[in-house]
Every structure is written in C-alpha cells, then in structure tokens.
Image: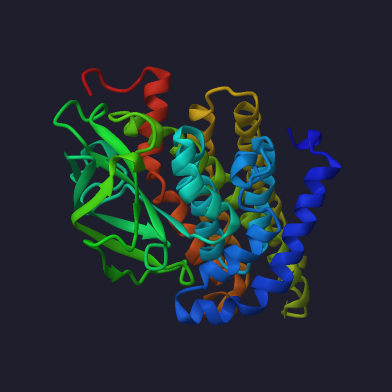
Length: 386
C-alpha cells in the first residue's frame, strides 16, 4: 500500500505538516504544562483545512476519500511534539465518529458529524468504565426508554477530550439480554442536564490531553440520538475499535521513527571518552535493530490499511498491529532514552516525553493481553467454553 501513495497523499502530508509546524508545535510545551490544549481552537484550524473528515461523507463536509488518506494523517500527527494532541485528534476522527458517519441517520449526522468535521464540535467516546476497561461486554451504564427518550444512568472512565467535548458517543445497555446484543451507541450532548465531569485525571503522560471521569444521572436524550439499530452497539463499537487500533499502530510507528531519528542526531553530537556516542558499535547496532522493528510495524499497519480500503475485515491485522505497536514503542523509546543518558531522564527532553506518552499504547484501546486473546480466537487456540 505504501508504494501506491499518490501526489494527493503527499499534498495532504505537506498540508498537515505545515499546520503542525505553524499552529501546534510552537505552543505544545505550554499546553503540556497546562495539562490541556485548546481543542476547539486546534480542531477548527484542522477543520478549515479539511483534515477532520478525510474519509467522511461529502454531505457532512467530508472528502469521502478512502481510508489510506486517514492513515497518512495518523502518521503525520506524530510530528506533533507530544502524544496527547495526536491522540485527542484521533478520537475526533477515528474513534468517536466512525459509527456516527457509517450508521447514523442523516438528521443525526447533520447535527453532530457536520460540526465535528468542521471543528466546531469536539467529540469524545464513552465506552470504558471503572472496572470495565478492555472488557467492553461488562459495562454497567444503562439507557432505559421513557416515551420518546432514553434516560441514561451510569458513568464512563478514561474519556479523552472529556472535559471540553461537546458530545459523547456513549455505549449503554438498553436491555437485559445477552451482553453482546443488549448494547446501543447513543450520542449524548455534554451540556445535557445530568451529565457531569466527576474529575479530570492526572496521568503519567499524555499531559496535554484532558482525560475525564464522567457521570450520567438521569440524563434524558431523544431516541433519535441513537446510532443505527438498538442492540447493535457492541458490534458497531468493535468496528470502531478496528479503526482505533489501526490509528494507534500507524501513529506509534511514526512516533517511534521520530525517536530513532532524534536519537541519531543527539548521539552523533554528544561525546564521551573522546568520541561521539553514536560511534560505539553497540549504539548504532541497537538503533539498526530498532529501525527494523519500526519497519515491521509499519508494514503490518499498512497491510491493515489496504484491507480497510478494499472493504475487507481487518480485525485480525489491526489487532496484530496494535499489539506490535505497543511493544515496539516501549522498546524503541526505552532503548533510545538510554543513549541520551541523564538528559533522557529530564522532563523536558523530547525522548522522555515520547517514552511517557508511548507507554499508553499497550493499555488504551484494548490492553496487550486483550489483543492476544482476540488473536488466539482467530487462531482457534482460545480455551473452549470461554
């Protein structure tokens, strides 16, 4: 797939790079210190350039391009000098809105997807809960029908963009049936009475991305805010996870490449015992090994992209890529940080920020262990009766 990228893909890459260099990176250090970035401001700028709806319907302001364009953007976002803003953008484009774009009614898309693509609304995704992270089937949030409305009670955890979002794509139980058939995706405007931000979470990394715990207390929304069919929410969310995991793999591959490139530059300039650090065979051999791992990750990720473009089920490849991404970014950033010496352990070092931010990949969007469980099911090795 990589060798099939066109001048249009490269034009997109150049546009995104220019926006990042001019409108994002000069302010990242301050946003990291503030532990939040101005999502409405940044997304509005991206929306004006058409970056938030590359594969979304034209009637909602999107470009209706194939998924390879979204994949290019996922990689380019790694040019941002932190992991939090790329992740927040990925939530807007590839995690909280794909089901809305694919399954939402024309009315629902006009009300929420169109402004999200324009950058006028910030989206968040409400799936994980306290005690129900990667185990999506065990969520407790409920939505009962009352007249023409849903009344929602429960809460969500680890909600990226949660403190400044305009709407949340909420997964809730709408019946007492089987856990894979009783869930529905519902759009919930964040200003609806009963929606509250319980707290903003302080994290090890991803500092500029606000992460919230949400509470829903008798939150009433019209049933027309339902995405697609009632009871199909689990399936729709699994489809969104496929794109989320591919996005994460693509972005991590590019971040890992940045880590290697930055480390080559730093170790070439830093001297110890009369020669540059890079002149030591162990260092340049280790960097070559890490580069090989990054290339393997990118190849796997782009194979998944190709399947999505062809309309094929990329769940297996996306799962493999997500697993590989989490482990590769940990190995690369930790290995590179070692070669920075003491400078690698200070907070304002670029490699330490990548080390902190990249660690989330093995947890968010399904932990490594969940990815292994999914792959074992594909392989037919998962224990019977489980």
